[in-house]
Length: 179
Image (cartoon, rainbow, N blue to C red; front, side, top):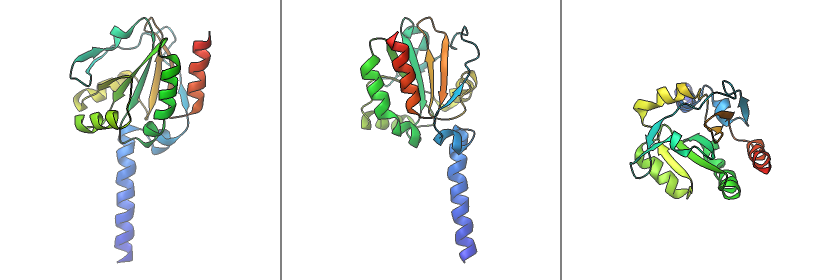
């Protein structure tokens, strides 16, 4: 009996970690502090995409050119994404005249996504990546874990990619906009 309970507990833990693994290559990546990746090259343009916003209207990434854009790949299921919301709100309040944040929800139903946006009062733009587009978008942006934040300059060029949640990301934004 003890062995069965232990086996069930291990199976449940494996399933939980596996579900995170679908969103991140390892649970450690999703939960770890910031991991900086090199965006292909500083001169590379961010791949354009079009996804539905909260009202169901298509929003195209390229329509945001002219300001810095922070793509925030997140999900309501991601504890580190949720824990990072207060810092994102603070950064948005400080720098919204120089940047836009585009939250890209991944691996949520439309209902859970909208509930999370409302529950956390997210003031920036939001789009949802439906399951049938998630793999292609993840491949285009090399998404390895959640949250992943990608900074794009006003011309649409990739500047920085950060996987995980860490105060150093917000320091980077402060330094970028202090110039």
